[in-house]
Length: 435
Image (cartoon, rainbow, N blue to C red; front, side, top):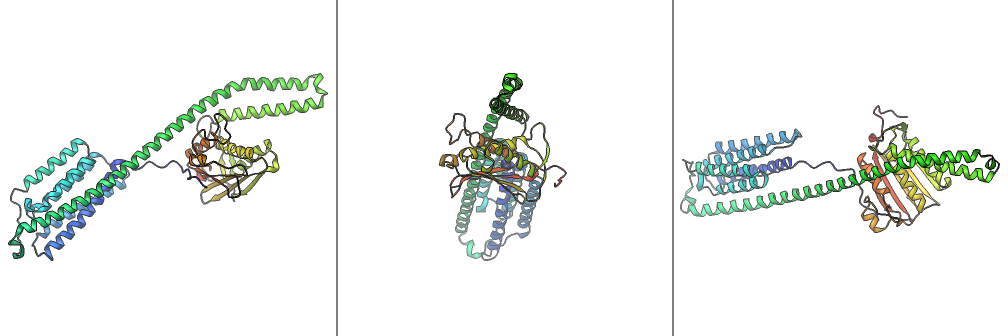
């Protein structure tokens, strides 16, 4: 059973103006195709004479507007409300021009102005929407001034109302289909926007949580510095005391105590160093393989060395800038795996194109269904300790900052598997040097 992969932070969706302009371009291509088909059917099988030059000129203008809109979208900047209003006004003018040369208000397709009004009301600001309404009313008023009448063949001249009703039906069908397609697309865009906003709020909440934890951790690290230094001095004094110097068992215990204090001091130093950005405040130049070995060596130092299996399949080494935060969260995952599976833990590194892939496996109880479904959220832990479950949460957020991600699953043979992937470019030195 595998959880959905936690991907890098998704790039922001295109701004609403760009999405709306793209939608208008698509609708305009549909309009151009429909107008060409209508002209072909009316002047062909129906035998109604149409002024081809003015009608095709309007279609040419619509095509030019589409190409201009596409060029605007390719510039990559946001599309403003004024630009959306301008292209819709061109659409109103083109429709008015075509109707003027094909019967004026007597043309049943005059109802298409309503479609443009509805589109304007949905996409534009209230003031711009009313501007489209005024433009449509002005176009309708202009159609009363000497429009070019349609010359009907004898088959339709006897009952022109029948032809008008047929055209009205086709116009209604066209408006209904386009409105359904348009509103459905807008609704999907709104749902996507709401989902993106919810994800952004979730990320903001998680980052705020991380900031608060970082402040608490750095504060605790500062507070712990003094007592740890005091303990280190006292242990040194005890080791040099004449009465204890000859006690071999006590000297071994004091050496273990000193090693434990030094490790605590190293952890505190690491917290202080990585309390800022993901790269820390004191980056070090190293190689990918050296960083792997350091992580594994640290785990082997606190566990039995023969229980941590290291499979190095990365290939050619790469010079990188050491990332204290990344090293720490990966080490935490490896420590957690070794804690639930003290007899065997696997740390495998490989390369998939430009991605670093790390797999940490164990033979422990595996992840519960709840943890698989809520992977990456804080305080989700199988250990039942208050405040637990922060390791994977920190891992996901550090990887997200570096453009990577992670996934978790349960192994078929038992135990858990954490898979980490990270762009090598996010760690590699700028000069691209290969060690």
